[in-house]
Image (cartoon, rainbow, N blue to C red):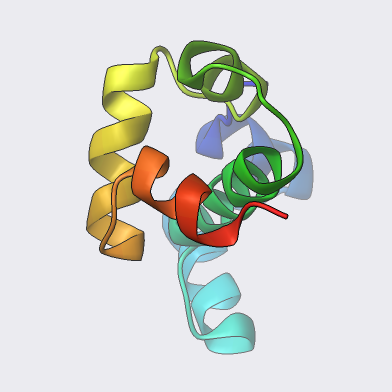
Length: 90
């Protein structure tokens, strides 16, 4: 589902800046980066374990489309989703 930093901060009774500062102090990363890591990790698992097309994987991981997932994936993993799938497929 979409991730809304303001809603999470409001739910916790914090401002978005306070949430980010506290989260960074505790986990050494921002909430947004943490969520992005979770999404990419899930995309990796789906690439490894399924034959789903990139569009379906993107939707299941919270991205608008496969093109954007591909750009983010390459930046974070250093390989395209298809190259990753070929290397890690069982």
